[in-house]
Image 1 (cartoon, one colour):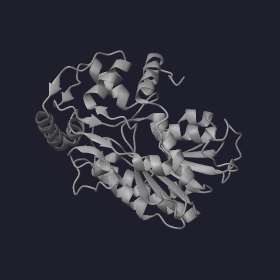
Image 2 (cartoon, helix red, strand yellow; image 1 turned 45 degrees about the vertical axis):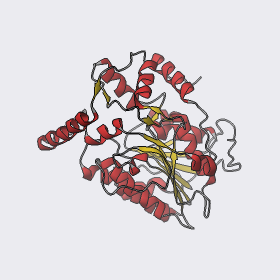
Image 3 (tube, helix red, strand yellow; image 1 turned 90 degrees about the horizontal axis):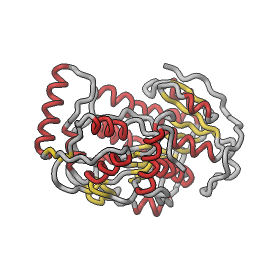
Image 4 (cartoon, one colour; image 1 turned 180 degrees about the vertical axis):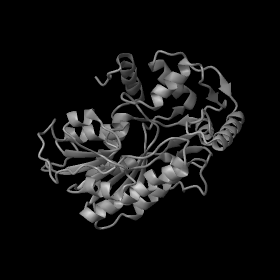
Length: 362
């Protein structure tokens, strides 16, 4: 599906004051956000619009909320090179946020969205002389099924992956970082487990399964995990945008992003459920049993050609039973990143949003 043509420049009214991170005099800069209607994409769009920047979104669906923000919202498929090129026309920077997430699906679909789509974004940047590309990656690109205890960006890519999502995201991240040069500056951010008001995937799924009595904790180890409140994740992207340029300290690098407050996975799960007014999960499944169940589900679903996501996969079992928290010193040093919203405050806002269905950001 082709994206509809967009004006090369937009002169939009200023919405809010200038950010403390700068960009003075850039009120007419046009910025493209792929996946602008998604959870993280929309938060980035909102922060860009608060600076008074002109924003264009490129996504598969229609998002009236973006139009209400004054965003030039185009529709299209990342795998369509001509649509991506048209969406990028006249833009001076790109936030490439869109991706196919999840733990189940055909490899071809993941490759088309995450790898081919990223290659198309890079090609569009070169075609139009776009100088900055901020890419949303994932910490799962370095997850090899074992504990990740406070690792930093020196952690290597594993030789094999147990799911198509991390495999294709790693391929895309490598392409983005390799593309960094004097004409196009690139950076990759790896925000971990994003949550908060406006989330229509992770939190609602947890709540629904808890209410149905389907949630189990995996393993008895109290493995620490990181997470990222939505506003902090979005701000990290803008901080990278501000500092990105030829020869910049962050150019061509990847950065872990999180709250910097790792807690046991079981505690995080219970606190999210508490925000929804639900009791903690008391039942536990041994990690080995969960892994075996995930393997069995993958075999059965594969043989039957079922497209819906299984309740368990090998990758999910590993994620739920291992530690994955990260050293974010590099982000603090190079990006000036410091999570503004704490874990406790974020959970308070989440609880308010879950009660009202409209938000809890005050």
